[in-house]
Image 1 (cartoon, rainbow over the protein chains, first blue to last red):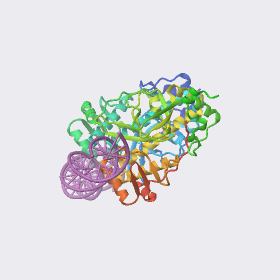
Image 2 (cartoon, rainbow over the protein chains, first blue to last red):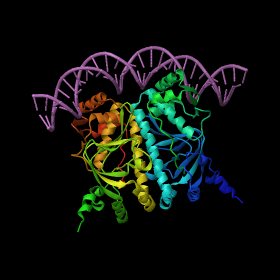
Image 3 (cartoon, each protein chain N blue to C red):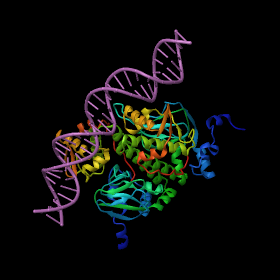
Image 4 (tube, helix red, strand yellow):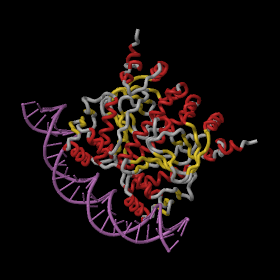
Length: 252
Length: 252
DNA sequence: CGCGACCTTGAGTAGGCTCAATGCCGGTGG
DNA sequence: CCACCGGCATTGAGCCTACTCAAGGTCGCG
């Protein structure tokens, strides 16, 4: 007979996690799955706009995004904001806080979210007992660094159009991997042009004009918090980049 | 009687590694030290200007910098370059290549260097047998991500002067931790203004003018490949940042 | 002495910024 | 039902930061 307390604590059992069915995530052994299930201590629902982590604080938790979106950012003392990355379902967040003393960045929910909760101390047991999963954690960390490397290249060396094109492609690729596309090439992500501006190191006005040009040229369409890629080829040309293939990854 | 072959293969035994004496590195247990000694399979000397890693290739090796400097960068198809980070003694490099299929960035030596060589496969045994060291590897990866986060903030949201100030402080702080300062506040690193420009996402000319202003205002001095901080306080103000303390870290 | 690597400076331009106003739309309260 | 408001997108105007092109200058080295 299922304990209702337990049901409240763990609505989605790991073995039946809907994310795990996606091709993009590597299969886990039953043993690994059992450990992760044990490692997970509950779920957290967060409202759009709420803070998951705050720069300068330290958190007792680690999360895996089950559903919804968030973004990771840093602020300058005078309020200028730089968005570092976006968090999609399957992303493992908060590692920095568990490994260092304090978070050096904040994370804010873009939409309502559900997250799997892990205890910071549990991470140590993971390392002691599961070499494979430890390697996965390292893998995820390296992967996330790779993504910021790309961002830095973009912000440092690409023009405004190139940056926009690159970001739109990047987001659509990530959404695609997770089957989050509304229709083919239609990406629904609750971000505003202000988010794009703060991601690309541009002003809001200039971002708007740059996107405006892409819209007039029928490369993309933009409505509200959703955009659609009309001419992916052209967008890729503008981005000055070679498409990189999706990589199968672990899911904790 | 020492085997000369062995001596050639391993000039600096890990127990007597000069870096390990520095306060900045956490003490290792004799057991850990033994493993690392075993893990290390040789040394590599590299000439200034030579490539340690090349984007798009995969390497069988991992390195720890013993002496000298390098920088990690990415190129756009048309040749624009973005420097992502600098590698100092004690830095563990090449993890991305070992963990992913291919390197997504290149690394070039700034000076003559000596590096400890580890085998890529050895990393797996490290994870299987040494939870503490595995955690260290993850720690280093998270740390390195933190540093790029800062860079991205800088390049995306700071003005040219702020960026210069921030970078100069960052480099001097790192040099200081490692006792690499020539004299107090005198930093000797073999980088050109072109490197600084490519790090900060600025043009060479504008970098030169911005540094020129700092020099005229007697905030720094610049000669050849060496600069000196004359007014650290002012530089910190310009950088719009709170000084962050050095953190003790592992050394593999 | 000449060459290459790097730093410096001038002049003109442009990409991106700020300030400011307007438009649009959905939600809310009278 | 309508007026109002807040959040977001859009547009215009003028400015300035940072870029490009182009010449020199300096220094160390063969």
